[in-house]
Image (tube, rainbow, N blue to C red; front, side):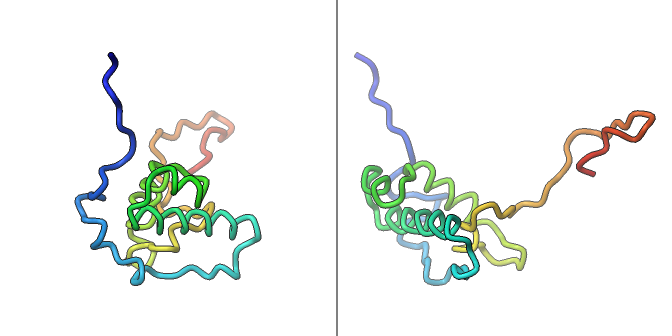
Length: 123
Protein backbone atom coordinates (compact mmCIF):
# COMPACT_ATOMS: atom_id res chain seq x y z
CA UNK A 1 0.00 0.00 0.00
CA UNK A 2 1.44 3.43 -0.91
CA UNK A 3 2.52 5.79 1.80
CA UNK A 4 0.04 8.57 2.53
CA UNK A 5 1.49 11.93 1.45
CA UNK A 6 0.82 15.22 3.16
CA UNK A 7 1.22 18.38 1.15
CA UNK A 8 1.39 21.94 2.38
CA UNK A 9 2.71 23.31 5.61
CA UNK A 10 2.65 22.13 9.19
CA UNK A 11 -0.44 23.18 11.11
CA UNK A 12 1.27 25.23 13.80
CA UNK A 13 4.49 26.47 12.23
CA UNK A 14 5.16 29.19 9.68
CA UNK A 15 8.84 29.99 9.05
CA UNK A 16 9.67 28.90 12.58
CA UNK A 17 7.11 31.36 13.97
CA UNK A 18 3.97 30.20 15.68
CA UNK A 19 0.94 31.30 13.69
CA UNK A 20 -0.55 33.04 16.70
CA UNK A 21 2.49 35.32 16.83
CA UNK A 22 1.85 36.80 13.36
CA UNK A 23 -0.15 39.95 13.96
CA UNK A 24 -1.68 41.17 10.71
CA UNK A 25 -3.06 44.27 12.42
CA UNK A 26 0.48 45.68 12.39
CA UNK A 27 0.96 45.01 8.68
CA UNK A 28 1.07 48.09 6.47
CA UNK A 29 -2.20 48.48 4.56
CA UNK A 30 -2.64 48.81 0.81
CA UNK A 31 -4.76 51.51 -0.80
CA UNK A 32 -7.40 49.31 -2.47
CA UNK A 33 -9.03 52.30 -4.17
CA UNK A 34 -5.95 52.75 -6.34
CA UNK A 35 -6.26 49.23 -7.79
CA UNK A 36 -8.12 48.31 -10.96
CA UNK A 37 -11.22 46.15 -10.55
CA UNK A 38 -9.39 42.95 -11.58
CA UNK A 39 -6.41 43.66 -9.31
CA UNK A 40 -8.76 44.55 -6.45
CA UNK A 41 -10.58 41.21 -6.86
CA UNK A 42 -7.27 39.31 -6.83
CA UNK A 43 -5.96 41.28 -3.83
CA UNK A 44 -9.13 40.63 -1.81
CA UNK A 45 -9.00 36.92 -2.63
CA UNK A 46 -5.37 36.72 -1.52
CA UNK A 47 -6.12 38.63 1.68
CA UNK A 48 -9.11 36.42 2.52
CA UNK A 49 -6.97 33.32 1.96
CA UNK A 50 -4.23 34.57 4.26
CA UNK A 51 -6.71 35.48 6.98
CA UNK A 52 -8.26 32.02 6.73
CA UNK A 53 -4.83 30.36 6.79
CA UNK A 54 -3.79 32.24 9.92
CA UNK A 55 -7.09 31.31 11.61
CA UNK A 56 -6.15 27.67 11.06
CA UNK A 57 -8.70 26.87 8.35
CA UNK A 58 -8.36 23.65 6.38
CA UNK A 59 -7.12 23.59 2.81
CA UNK A 60 -10.65 23.07 1.53
CA UNK A 61 -11.96 26.10 3.45
CA UNK A 62 -9.10 28.26 2.17
CA UNK A 63 -9.82 27.16 -1.40
CA UNK A 64 -13.52 28.03 -1.01
CA UNK A 65 -12.77 31.48 0.40
CA UNK A 66 -9.97 32.51 -1.95
CA UNK A 67 -9.64 30.09 -4.89
CA UNK A 68 -6.00 29.56 -3.81
CA UNK A 69 -4.53 26.38 -2.39
CA UNK A 70 -3.07 26.26 1.09
CA UNK A 71 0.40 25.95 -0.39
CA UNK A 72 -0.06 29.05 -2.54
CA UNK A 73 -1.25 31.04 0.47
CA UNK A 74 1.76 29.89 2.48
CA UNK A 75 4.00 31.03 -0.38
CA UNK A 76 2.29 34.44 -0.49
CA UNK A 77 2.92 34.89 3.22
CA UNK A 78 6.55 33.81 3.18
CA UNK A 79 7.63 35.30 -0.15
CA UNK A 80 5.56 38.47 -0.24
CA UNK A 81 4.07 39.54 3.11
CA UNK A 82 7.03 38.82 5.39
CA UNK A 83 9.79 40.18 3.12
CA UNK A 84 11.15 43.68 3.56
CA UNK A 85 9.50 46.35 1.45
CA UNK A 86 11.22 49.39 -0.09
CA UNK A 87 10.89 51.33 3.17
CA UNK A 88 12.66 48.63 5.21
CA UNK A 89 9.51 47.36 6.97
CA UNK A 90 7.77 44.05 6.29
CA UNK A 91 5.61 44.34 3.17
CA UNK A 92 2.47 43.12 4.94
CA UNK A 93 -0.69 43.62 2.92
CA UNK A 94 1.28 45.73 0.39
CA UNK A 95 3.04 42.55 -0.67
CA UNK A 96 -0.20 41.17 -2.06
CA UNK A 97 -0.47 43.87 -4.73
CA UNK A 98 -0.64 42.07 -8.09
CA UNK A 99 2.28 42.53 -10.50
CA UNK A 100 4.47 44.40 -8.01
CA UNK A 101 8.11 43.36 -7.94
CA UNK A 102 9.32 43.18 -4.34
CA UNK A 103 12.85 42.03 -5.10
CA UNK A 104 14.79 44.11 -7.64
CA UNK A 105 15.87 42.51 -10.89
CA UNK A 106 19.40 41.13 -10.85
CA UNK A 107 21.04 40.01 -14.07
CA UNK A 108 22.70 36.62 -13.68
CA UNK A 109 23.97 35.91 -17.19
CA UNK A 110 27.03 37.77 -18.44
CA UNK A 111 26.55 40.40 -21.15
CA UNK A 112 27.77 39.17 -24.51
CA UNK A 113 27.04 41.88 -27.08
CA UNK A 114 27.55 41.19 -30.75
CA UNK A 115 29.38 43.74 -32.97
CA UNK A 116 26.14 45.71 -33.46
CA UNK A 117 25.36 45.97 -29.73
CA UNK A 118 22.59 43.38 -29.61
CA UNK A 119 22.49 41.07 -26.61
CA UNK A 120 22.66 43.71 -23.92
CA UNK A 121 19.00 43.77 -22.89
CA UNK A 122 18.38 43.80 -19.18
CA UNK A 123 21.51 45.70 -18.10
